Length: 496
Image (cartoon, rainbow, N blue to C red; front, side, top):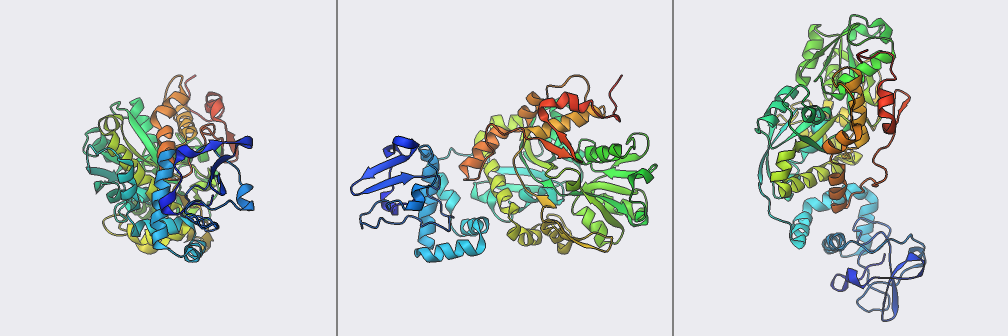
């Protein structure tokens, strides 16, 4: 859509429906057509707030190309207002249209958005314009484990995403997942970095007191690996691994269930043919070096750190088992949401903005520099950079390039929760019949995620596409057939 200048934006109520579903506004000499770009500050192909060629202070007459664009329903007034405010700010920063377009085309949409948001008080002014309700609590404590899976939660602190939402966050580095769980149960932390399975387990009372916990966003997808000790370079076939000792970070973790899945697919019973030990992620490399374990399926940066320290090699990336699998999540208790709804919404927005920035490859090296610091991961920058950029040494003499080694897709897909529940059943952690969909949708807050993504101008998943199918080691998982899937594996711990 060609937009009018900042002082003469059409009011949303003036749009009227015409033949063919186009949304049109007639004013004086020109015809105005609403398409789905609205006030898009980051569209490098079309002018921003361009005046009409007739010289009057209103929207430009649509071009032939614009007339061919798909039409949409009338814009949401609040969304239109947010976009208009940002468009005015960007127009002030780039008063000459060619400069704005050249900048966008040179650096790309996400990088431009992050850079401009760092210079202009976009979020603050938008919040003022929308008269957001006051926060019930602005001083928050958030727990995290020092792994790259926590990237959005961590980087939101030094890059001021929390501050932009009016939050003063204290990030508390925590030693292990059991301690993360306990601090949330004891209300020592307001929100936390979780393993994606942990809110499911806690909500079901598995391994702890039963307390309703909620997953607001995924923190990452992929980003794990199966790492073996160097002495096993010639024993890459899992059929040779009987008697091996493996470490995983927690029982209720994607690592435990992906490792079990992988071993079982190669004919090994993970409960009888190998040992699987729970080991805090920061201790995994030391245990590998000492010979206490033969390998671990764990989080980065410790897989890469094992290579860096020349004590292990990367046997496979977790994305090789299930590309796009969840690992960690940002979560809170149901009680916190009920008592602090405005604070929770602000926190949600901050994490979503951080995730969107972290997803862009051009930002990864800077993020690696920021989060490698002692207060956060306390790792060599080169190790974290190799993980986040996906260009890394594998410990077998090769340098690999895997750009999606880790991603920060924030969508808490309910079908991911359903898969995790099937594996908890399969291995005896969860007994009896399971209402997969009900549990998934209670714990994984997909409705709230869609709402806040739309508020921020991010593209939320469609309401009719919340249960996608996945492929794990080449086998399709259909969440509509979860019970059948759970019982379909020859190696399992279902009671007779």
